[in-house]
Length: 173
Image (cartoon, rainbow, N blue to C red; front, side, top):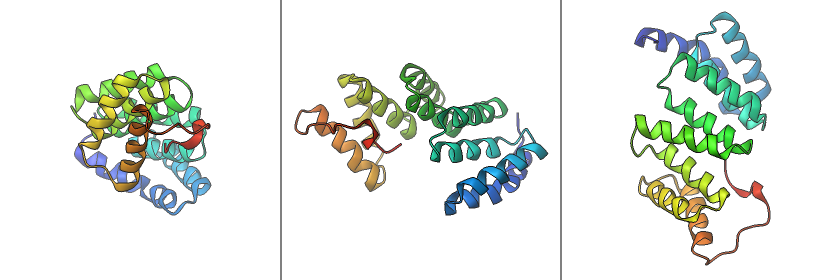
């Protein structure tokens, strides 16, 4: 288990890679975060943000691996669990994504990211009742405008008021 001091140190070590990721320099962020991990393979933040970088590049398997390494180092790291869940979803492993989100809800009831992951995953599976329930619960958390609109669009499709788009690539990850 990481102490508070270790967590602060881990964040400071990973911060240059995080900054690169935020500016969109994904390849350099990967290089820097991998170097951090070589120096300290217990750094949960380096693994988490490496997962985010790979996710941005749609390298789902690499993203999943990095997120799971983060969870191994920090078993209560909900953000890494959510990242792993989305990677699983994008890999077509929807049942595993649902299980991951359910694990998050056991730790943090009504976690917005877990509700979103469950709603989107059930939506893609065509499970209308749970999709509606989780998406509506997510909206109750007052998400940012862009995601709010996306979720409302999915609810319109579920209500039969809008036809879904032909492509599966239309949902924000």
